[in-house]
Amino acid sequence: MVDYLKQNYLSTIQEKTGLIPDAYFSGTKIWWLLDNVPGLRDKARRGGEVIFGTIDTWIIWNLTRGNKDVLTPERGGAHVTDYSNASRTMIFNIHKLDWDDELLDIEGKIPRDILPLPRPSSDKRIYGYTGPEVSQLLGGVSIPVCGDAGDQQAALFGQVGFDVGEVKSTYGTGNFILMNIGDSSIRSKANLLTTVYYATEEKKARYALEGSIFITGAAVQWFRDGLKAIEVSDEIEPLAASAPDTGGVYFVPAFVGLGAPYWDQYARGLIIGITRGTERKHIARAILESIAYLTRDVLEAMMADTNIRIPRIKVDGGAAKDNFLMQFQADITGIEVWRPIVFETTSLGAGYLAGLAVGFWRSLDEIKQNWKLDRVFKPKMDPETRERLYKGWKAAVQRALGWAKEVPWAYGL
Image (cartoon, rainbow, N blue to C red; front, side):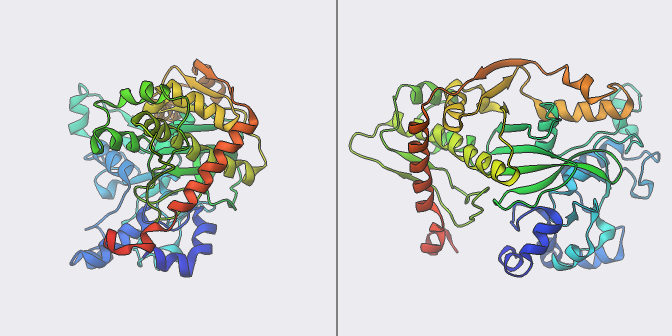
């Protein structure tokens, strides 16, 4: 499916959705389900028997189920999504802020009737109110549901990234980097995604560039569980810091291919540069350094697309607690890394959006006052060393690209 879309509709999909065709997005999943689950397409055509939604749609529907005071009462709950989540499906036109009939047709003839109603991320109309079952758990109080955003968009909002050029990087199982690009979308020439950032009004949105890195923190988990090299994840920081460098070792964590800016589903992970002197600590350091290298790849692409020099990187997620990694991130990019006191920026951002909708917060400027700094990591590495190390990283990546095509039998392809 993905190869078919890339070969025939790459430009159309990128222009309308800001995305590059990939199985990561749900459009191809709906297509597969409609084609492979017996009777599902017929039920979808009849209407009412089958509906689709991303995870936010499912949560909002369950929160509001049984309450008729919702935007879509015929669904038995609020069957909605916000523009930012819709923009991740590969069937949503980010310029018109609505489902796109041409995309629905080419991605499996998906009936529009099964899709949720797209709404602003902070919706003064209110998606709906909690239904009887949920309200009973809340002491009989019916709560308005009115804030919704994609995981990474909410994190940037929680990081109060309201100015053009503001960037956040979330360090989790994977890394996700977003840059606020303002009221107009940009078609990336550097293999990044253009996404809806957030909206507080109907048919009006702010946009972001996004770089999705599939495997970062998951590589630490592999080091712990796969290699049994450490017992708990936190052991990797002091182990990596005990090595003055990697001894020439590079680690490319392409376990499931590489995301932005490479978008190579056939790339596979590798460790290269091993010598007789390579020890466990060198591998540990190479794993952490790979996270920072991949992040720089995305930041370089963002600056190329926008001609904006990134002023700072605001970080969050579990691995942002790793001081070694944060310092190397600053060193390898030459950009200051700002770590906030509050790490749970996704839930914070969703809360801000809901609060704006009901008037708890009156403005973005008021929300900005809530952001508090924990620590700034300033670059210490000299530019010559920085670029020499990064050149080695790019060479390692080139050796990982396309590997599954070289030995497809090893991966069941």
